[in-house]
Image 1 (cartoon, one colour):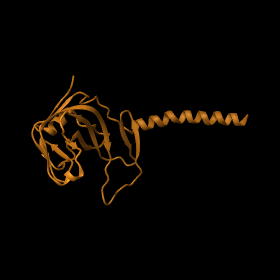
Image 2 (cartoon, one colour):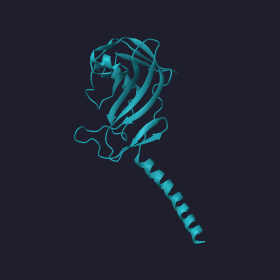
Image 3 (tube, helix red, strand yellow):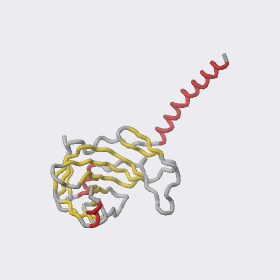
Image 4 (cartoon, one colour):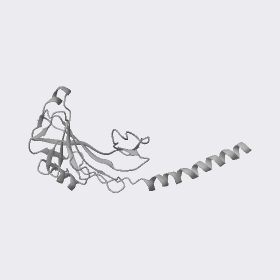
Length: 195
């Protein structure tokens, strides 16, 4: 009889703790879930040639200007990610004006570490929620809040994605809005949302 009573006591305790733990997690973590900013079937166009410096596989855009790195991480930025063979990484490349179709979109938070002083101060645990992977953080802090648009086209373009993001506190804001993305790319690229 004691075994049965202890089983129900433990079982009841676990059932009582789970909702409290879920409530605590939901109160401590704000997941900015916005509507899809650029849905599948939308289009992205490169409007003018964009130069990728040697050693890089991305061309960054911020405030409508192309650059080899982000100048202000606290402002929205975008970049075209490319797939370049290792042999071509030693030379400068140019992305020609091209039309792309968005085939997939997703959000991701990327935690960064200060190297070499602080590589990792705690264990990071990936938690899958919905279609994105979110990081459970012990310390909190700023993260790169990125919005990925996987791209496809009929040409031989090495571009694989347009990524737009901002370095911010995830409990203070979400990924960049469509207007912020358009401001980041300026006249260099056009993002047209499908109906």
